[in-house]
Length: 209
Length: 209
DNA sequence: TTGACATGCTAGTGATTGCTAGCTTATAAT
DNA sequence: ATTATAAGCTAGCAATCACTAGCATGTCAA
Image (cartoon, rainbow over all chains, first blue to last red; front, side, top):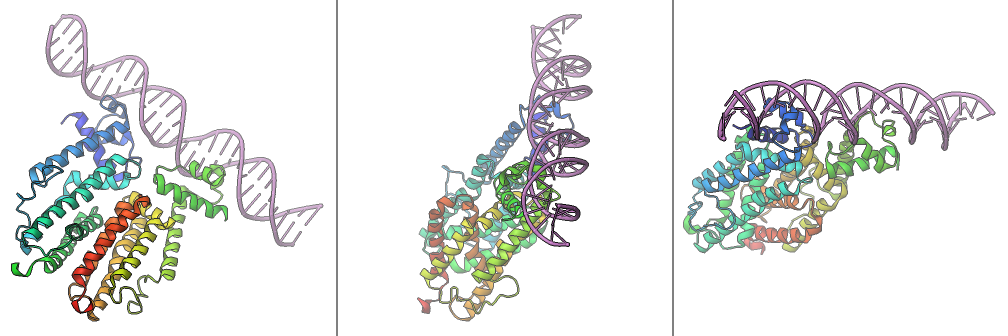
């Protein structure tokens, strides 16, 4: 890996641990194995390192949405999604659990989550990304999906957006609670399962039971 | 107000704006109107100022739970609570909205929220407080309340804890989203209302409609 | 073989950090 | 009036901060 890339990666790890202000360029350089002055052959400032992290995460996220099939903005293709098609309980638990664990343990996503929370009030850009990915996009996606499912007669009719928030908000809360405790992810998964059970119990149409 | 108290208050404001590392003792002293060296007549270190903030917030929160009647730990007195007794839609919206707006705009709570998010990974104590107040206690309280309401035949029977999380998690998400945008609180309230409408629509027993 | 360039290094910059020593002054009890 | 204490001040400490200048070295194309 190029030195420049390694600087970005090590800085990502350090910023996620101790924050932007709490990390010195000297510490980043030490993690890479060079002197702090040499860092400036690759980046013009500490801020530029941070910017490269933002770019790296953006790239990672857009790669994810390609491979995982989780739509991003325009290419929503909700109809094509086989997710939740029948609102089968076990399948829904399985898929939700996998996505949840992925978010908790993926090294980029989990570090991005931490940095976003620490730097949200100093850095509009990174918090804007966080808000879009973990709030607006997630809710919009679920809303469209649930609207489709209502049309298809799988879900009870209702306010699709409110239902989507009711489904997603507990996942968001669990992510917040267990973001830095991925060791306790079994506890989190147990709660997640019972939330999904409750959701299906309430929202699945009788003729699909 | 005593100088010591003023130092704590000004530090609280500054830490909430720029974080612990992002705020210098000189800035705190300037906000109070004294020289930074004079600060050390009242506190032995910057960390001790932070600790006094933690104590201040603890005091404020326990005062709140006395006056607001929101129970804390032991003195749960769930039965005595008139909240949600009939699951009246407008009343529920009104109460939830008031508590929500209070959390968003109370100067101590809102600053505590910001500091807790910024310092959560550096300071176990303050994040423990945050977790207890805004996650564990809140959910426990709602769980007990909903369990009572199920017994009383107001709510549909079900997993009280899962229902509590379904009710509370959207509020938590909205708090996260609008914590530093109390100007847009009308947008937040609108979403909150539609969540409550959906909740009541799904969970209120037919014979109470 | 030469020369250009990339990438490391040492050494050091001025600014800022949290904090201390020690002096002055205002207040208030004896 | 004297004196003790609290609380302000100036001055300055060593450490650390992000960052720069300039030199050494290794690689690779001409």
